[in-house]
Image (cartoon, rainbow, N blue to C red; front, side):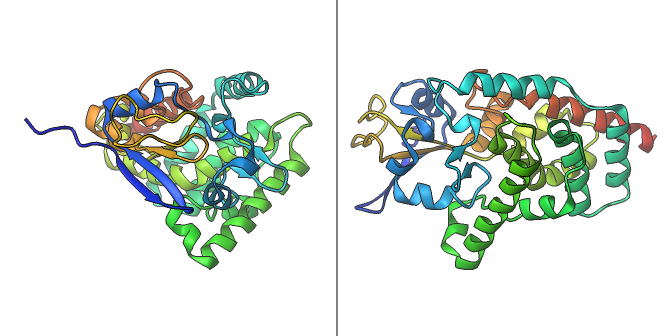
Length: 297
């Protein structure tokens, strides 16, 4: 029997300490250990420098106003539950049958990724604004950073920062008072960066259940946690993490593919804090698949 590989670790003194966990059981072990938490458990200024640098160019953080996306907040944060409840209520509003038909027509016509992304942003995000999101914003959302390597490329990093500011400024100017701009701005970015590929996967495989499609091709490949205690996670690591310094990358996309568990596609293997738009996404993709099947027939 092959031994389960231990998590990989990259430690560069005074630069970074990163642990990468890919095995499904290890992901849940780390997540439930109590030794890690969401990034904003620590004040932004106290986070590792490379974390601060990377996230200011992403859809997860508004560096100008020091605001973080809701799932980056610890459950202990006073704002967490009201923000999540608001997003859950918005997700429950669902979508119209005309939305599915419009997207099906675009997919069938082999519309561009930009056209698909723009149309899906309206389906998901007009509920927040009460109006269409301009194409200038959806175009900007393409360029916020999605991986750490992009932060090392100067022009990509600058474009990511500029794009993030464009989205956040639009949200600040347009959203109703009291709506958290990063929660909504993130949703625009997520739809733009992940949806076109997801729609094409469904269109290319009309007979496989969408749950199986999206465990094999998870839209979100990984999530980050930060150590809140020095820990080896019960012997998973040779040397302990460092509280406030060690960042743990949970490779949920790999875990979803290996287990076929849709809860790894939208979280870390369990229902706790799973993406609030999980059922919206799956329901829309099922309806899209059924509509495209009917067109095929």
